[in-house]
Length: 118
View: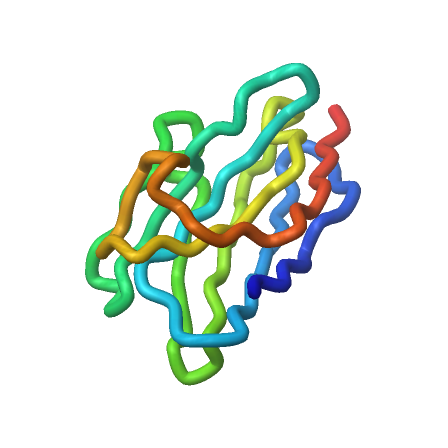
């Protein structure tokens, strides 16, 4: 089970940090987002050790994924937010080392809404 928090209403250029706590041990973790009327989009993934990370092109250089395995928690630091970052953000876990593919993820958090105003 995944419990995410960190959504909210911010302005362009602001920063926001998501966290996602897992109830059990998780392996690869990822963040996805879904804007209204759009497909769910890959944002970032991280391996269990944290040594491997990948980002979607739209967020590369602005977002950072990290994890604290002692707390079973993964984070998504979002900087330089833009209106096009407005979406519901989901954390998810996979049995793979890491993955950019939505279909590789077995468990999903409830989603948190981020709204970036211009």
